Length: 211
Image (cartoon, helix red, strand yellow):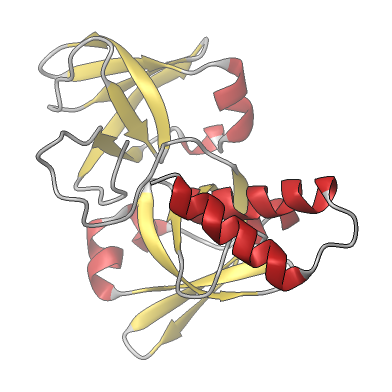
């Protein structure tokens, strides 16, 4: 599990045959989980100057592999005593989105990202989303895209400052919202003409009982 608060970059040494080698002083243990641009990957080699992770075919098919060059966001898995200052991030990429526009707004930037309907169903205004490993707050959700307001601190301390229109980014929707949407769809499939208020109550009760 991760927080989406990325404080480190790593430089890609190479990416070939599903092996990604990164120059970094992170020095993880073999078998440790490391989020690279938001994707949870396993360390298979580690030294004081670099480490390597392996991508499965499924992971490679879900992420924007063309961005595995230059600098990438890296975040080690949370430890029990770490504070959760971002939001709960699994490192399981749902899909890829495309930056459609970038507009300056006062001292911040508004990024509009086009993505799949399935991902948009799991997004709510003021909810959380993880983009390339960065925990962000959703500004607005449209019919085919969503927008984010990126503050100066985030622009200065992540790779977002170098992002341009047309870039593909890794997207992980919020696990809590995604779980509720999934339960709603399952409920609708197994009940004929359900009362909407009853659906909401049943889902609420299901979530409450799980804690």
